[in-house]
Image 1 (spheres, rainbow, N blue to C red):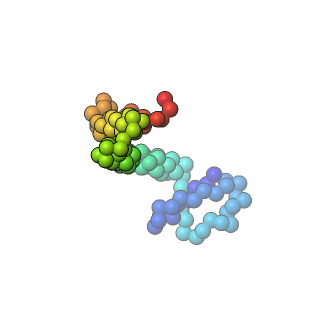
Image 2 (cartoon, rainbow, N blue to C red; image 1 turned 45 degrees about the vertical axis):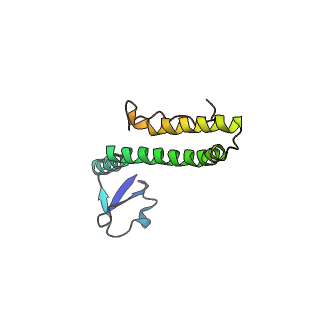
Image 3 (cartoon, helix red, strand yellow; image 1 turned 135 degrees about the vertical axis):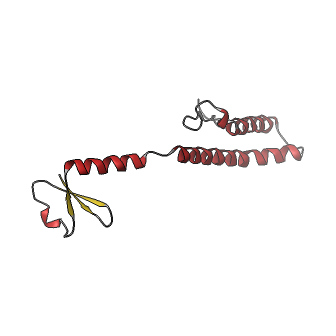
Length: 127
């Protein structure tokens, strides 16, 4: 492959080295050496690795989504308790969802957080 760069945008283009695509090489593109292209690829790959701050933001966002989901499951079950209309199955489900919500809320206490998180299983989720 032959690699070219458009310096104004930083866009890199690849063309077959056999010359079969030379007609598509736009004017103003600058040919890259193999080492220049390798440096650009390394920089692109490094940019894909999330920063510690991004990892923390992503994990906290997932925690918040799971807490909100649990809250949606808990609310009608708690309503049944509050209205004195709860069944034994609903009471067991309410307890399981509340235990799950507490476990999700405690995720930041795990060793390795936020780089490594062992997310709790939702009630009824297969092992």
